[in-house]
Amino acid sequence: MIWKKFNGDNIQLPIKDVVRQTIEKESAKGVKLKVCIGTDSQVKGAETEFATVIVFLREHCGGFMYIHNDKTRQKLHIKERMLLEVSKSIEVAYELCDLFISYNVEMEVHADINTNPQFKSNDALKEAMGYILGMGFAFKAKPEAFASSSCADKIVN
Image 1 (cartoon, helix red, strand yellow):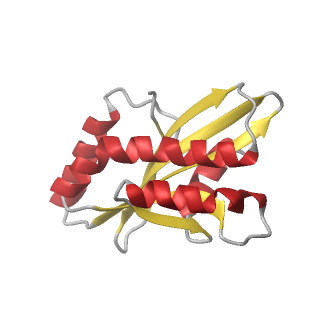
Image 2: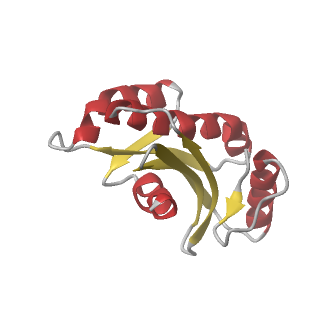
């Protein structure tokens, strides 16, 4: 998986090493971190582009994120696409969760799924919530899911 900084620079190390270094650097400065992981997607012709983000929030001091993009030509229905977004976020959260636990960093998984039943994405809400909570992660959906609906959304649009 190739990860990038928001400025577009590629990250050369494995993401787990970068996240560990980031937590240690911020902790050494006395900064309390919270991490939110989310994925959004955009259908562009025959391709669907995904952006997964790891958002670091510094308590009272802004934040930053790391980004991973990938694409598929597989035709997906809306519910499949929403659950694939969640799956991509969970994959990253699962890879990093032992770091967050050992450094006492709060982590949430954000799903770009609307809680309003009038929206098509709502069809995937119950499954997504069950998947995320079943993995033991804190869950946020729209409108609180800013990592997916605002941060990742800016990368794929």
